[in-house]
Amino acid sequence: MKMVKAIILLSGNGSNFQNIIDNIKSGFLKIKICSVLSDNKNAYGLERAKKEKIKTIIISSNNDYDIVTKTIIENSVDIIILAGYMKILPASFVNKHIGKILNIHPSLLPKYKGLNTHHRVINNKEKYHGASVHFVTPDLDNGPVIIQGKVKIENDDTENTLKEKVHKIEHKIYPLAIKWISEKLVKKESDKCLFNNEILTTPIEHI
Ligand code: GRF
Image (cartoon, rainbow, N blue to C red; front, side):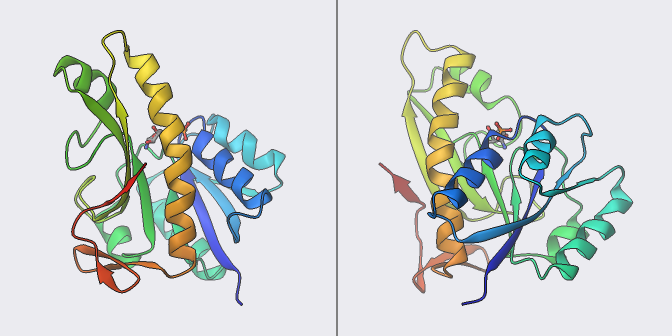
């Protein structure tokens, strides 16, 4: 079978990227990461890529999305994985690669789109928080959700403890979603996800 190829876009620490690498090494994910691209030349994720001898590319301006597309075409990339990529992708880029771009967002979408999710859930005295993996569409954090993982918010939770709990869940659900997509078990069809050719009426809940 043809090896599924992916690229990673990140802006920061890259713990999700590292976790994907670890899952490739363990044999759970059968994909190849062709390049890691970042809008932040100081992102620690780029160091992680260099350590793994994966090519790195800096996206310095909005025009550089042509370079990203070139990378995708030249490498026949199947999956574009956003792993803490903090820039909003231009709609023209997203539309060109629709159904191939995946994101992980630290909230139980459709709740808490955008930034500072941990702070906002605590302020709103929510009982639960979590993370969602979704297909990217031109509307921010609005694409169809594949899988979510929930965490309970305890009275003594702070932004930092919640962030840690959410990261743990992210490291479980992102490899699962990537595996399903690489095995063509999950697909995007218009504004829905298909799992095994059945429409997902609600996201898969990770227990
Ligand atoms: C994660 O919380 C992810 O949900 C969000 O950005 C953060 C990236 O973390 N999109 P890391 O760089 O993978 O550690």
